[in-house]
Length: 217
Image (cartoon, rainbow, N blue to C red; front, side):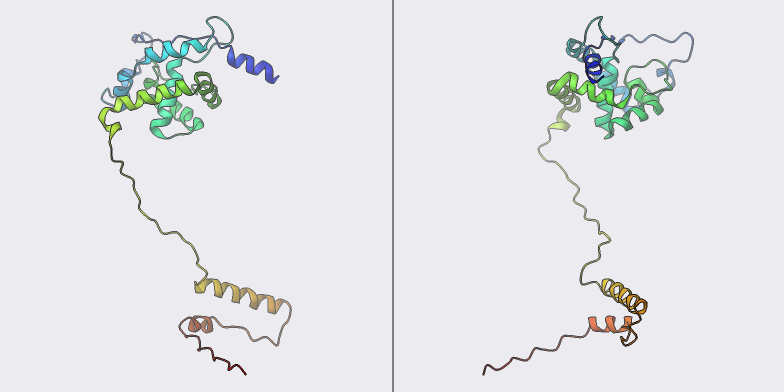
């Protein structure tokens, strides 16, 4: 069963991505409904999709195996994953909900289903290998121009306080005292005088008496 699945994963028949945008005669064109000044749509025009199509097509069989997902779709999902800092599961879900994501990946009409299963992104990364993934990364850096080559990187080092109880905090002592008083009552230790909270708070501000040095006889 596992061997058959692996063979099917390797022998994927390549489905060419359509680079020509034709108006939908039977419905409203997706791009006509979106803001052309949106950064994602501007970025989609600058990306060399044909280059990825030619480079990654060598990893597919021409007419063997199950039909694959278009290379532009898979590369677009990986780019969106990086740009939006999303997981594989989140990026395919957001793609279904966001028409700008779909237009970025080359769709002409809005699709109401997931583009693929999230595990297909894992298979695609394995298919193109480390070299292919680095090509996508270098291209994304190149699109940013000089901004990606800055010598200085600004890092936010804001420190946020956390709700941590330290050993010197009186809250710990009060919790322990309350717990011991409950245990004493449960076991009927009547001779034990319960410790009051005021005694603990007062002891915090009472200095310890100095230790008397014993004379060596």
